[in-house]
Picture 1 (cartoon, helix red, strand yellow):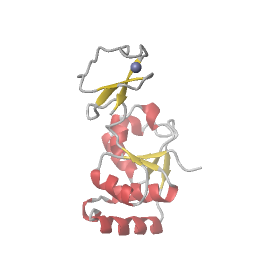
Picture 2: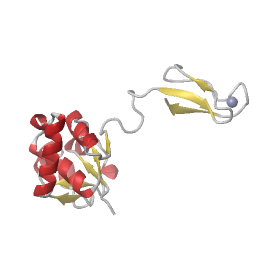
Picture 3: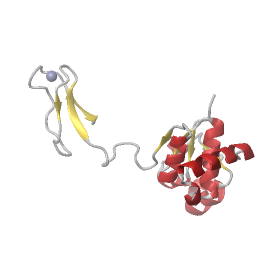
Length: 160
Ligand SMILES: [Zn+2]
C-alpha cells in the first residue's frame, strides 16, 4: 500500500484536521509546521501524521529531475524532501508551489493543490441535464434552472 498523501506546510495552515489525518510529512517540515501552525503541531500524534525522511538516492533523483525542468534553484531543501518522499513512497503531493507541482509532474507523481480543493472560484461551472445531457453555460454563480425544458430531467451543476 502506498502512503495516503504528502501535504506541504500550507496544508497544515489551511486544511481542517480531518483532512490532515493520516497524511505523511517529511521530518524537515516539523519546524515549519511548529512555526506556522503551532496548534496543529501539538496534535500531530493524535492526527496519525507519519513523519518520514527521504533517502539519499530519492533526493538525488529529484534533484536531477528538478535540474532538468529548471526548478532546482527555486526549491527549498524542504521542497526537495517533500518531492523525494512522494517519489519514493508513490504518494500524491498536495502543494500550491508551482515549482513543486512542475517537478512532481515531470516525475510522473500525482499532485493536487492545497487551496483549490472543494468548490473553487477558479473553476467554471455549467449546468447539465442528467437525462438528455443538454448543457447551459455562463449562468453566473447562482443559476436558477432546476429542470430541463427539453426532457424534464433534473439539471445538475458540474465543473466545465
Ligand atoms: Zn434534458
